[in-house]
Length: 189
Image (cartoon, rainbow, N blue to C red; front, side, top):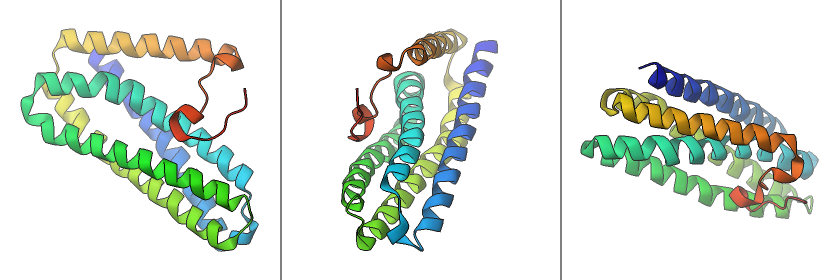
């Protein structure tokens, strides 16, 4: 059960960090939306990259690759929840494509494109918050009930391996995956 506690605590801490990233970006977007002609697309792109790298990587590596398959295998009645989370992820990826297009247009310094960019980012962040709420309120409690100790151990091992891999990536900049893999943003080599 100690491994389950580790996994759940890790996810909880990362969800709090993700909420902090989202709140910070939403605050910036809401402030700048009133003055779209003053949008700094490069700053906006950097803020988005920070959130997206953290949010999408965490979700893909830990929730989609480790936790969802274990819940799905342990409880057939979880299919609707898993489908909802997968749908939110798919919608989020589509929103990221829209954000990327809006960012390119906002580079032209058009106030109309800037307003649309702010709205699109807001929608993406709201989607992330919905996904986090569903994970916290439904997925994690269900996982606690249906996943066996052996499966928690396997999930915990995967989390530790991913954290070790991620720590190794921070050692060398060229080892980090480009954000473009997740968002379509250009990432210089």
